[in-house]
Image (cartoon, rainbow, N blue to C red):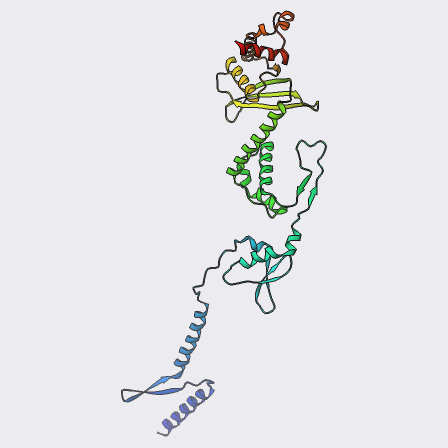
Length: 347
């Protein structure tokens, strides 16, 4: 019995030693349940509290529903930059006068437009003085020596249409990103041009240049024509080109393409002659033709024979030429043409 008592004392001492070495000893809480008492380990309560804290941190990281930010598409912001003040408030800063304006949460820009209308620094930055430009002596293009410093969208459209005609560019080149980037780098006010718009501008430029050429041909007494048929390898379509050569009022030799129209097959001499006469009547030069030059194709020979037959119909109106040229191989003068048409009108 004494040995058993000694062993129990030793076990109690070891148990007391283990409990004393634990820094956070478990605690027990008595809870009355149905008139009795139940012991709950307090460590479980601490674990639940820690879990609650962890869940609270996760809830803070969960995404919440927020108002979608509006896209900043107003052009008024191009003259302002966003700045943050030391008190962490956002402001708009005018790039011209450096004035600070409020930045409302609604994203409205009415106050920005109102400021730009009153900003004196912006008005000074916009050039209003006429600039003097010098055109090279060998330039083929007409340039106005005085130009306004302001951006003119109509002038830009006209210049773009002329560039497309000169360089033979497609209409959709104006919608490419590279074309817009090239202009916006040096001209921030540049407005994009659609291909439908540039197509209409090209037709307008053609009509303007045609009226200029018509007024120039009215002052021309004699004009020589050259004609040829050109075939497109891509489209498989034949075109008839008629070019006029004349001397202007400044005694300079000029060359202009008068017609470039499709010529469907067969390319007979009658078709070539009809196309040639239609071109001369459209330009009002049917009485001013001096010479007609063609290549040695057989259909061109037929076309010229038809033209000679048409001219022989009024041979009797040129008695001077009839006496000098029995075969009628020369062209009458402008006075002879007037006499011939005077006699034809009396018939």
